[in-house]
Image (cartoon, rainbow, N blue to C red; front, side, top):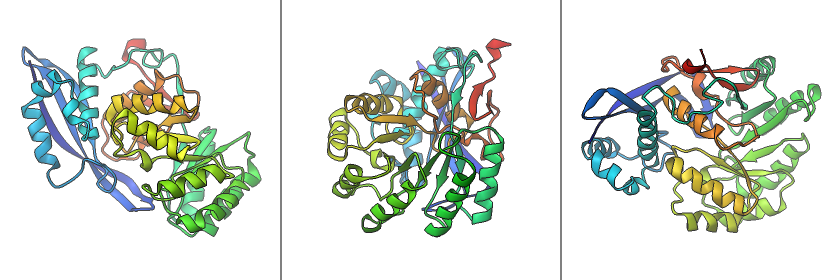
Length: 344
């Protein structure tokens, strides 16, 4: 028999972080502790991370749902968590807490060369939206830290300034030296998107995430068909449950890439389904954290390593908060490293 409880944790950003949906200064997670009733000292940890403007399971009854799930945890586990399909953040928390508990409650969910400290994961350096000069400083810092791939959030300042910023990088570093990804978070209208994609493509951009808002499948399919710049679906995947529905979306839109955020798209099992569906169409993918604390980030990173994806992953957000949890994860030369207790 299992017992469980969720405790709220409000992460505070070191500096206000801009997206096309506004500026974030804090965000909520609920940390799950899971244990077997016969051994309360051995505890598995998981994280239900919420982005209130984005998470498909967020509403005014979310906390009631957490309390209900904790009170009925054994029923959910016995039913293989199927009733939580529409609650990806909660599903992800329980999946990862169970893995943590199974492996001894030592924050090792997927034992591997990564958790042994013998292998690393290439990641992109994230550049948040903001004033031109602040973004330029972020870029200089990432390049100095050894990143070979950077991702710029665009859509918050004027497009001409963003182009000028990217051009300044390209004047100093070609695409063989620095891979540049951009994320529009749906900031472009369908009417203007193609012209903006052409202008971005002239700067040898690797890809753009979600150029237009999700739900415009016909318009997105047309962009993906004619784009001069590889398009990656991100928000478009949120709320799509069931393997056949995933196949249908990819059949209709045919993107070049998809971006996988486990706590937004159905936990680890939902992510596995998206990977399987993408590979049926030879669509490439990478995995990204979604502003989780180090508890969630640790789980996503360990899972990601097992997928043997050579592309830079989006796993560097653990450094954003002033009050994060202790972690064995660190970043060196643009790669994520696990400083394993077991490797000492």
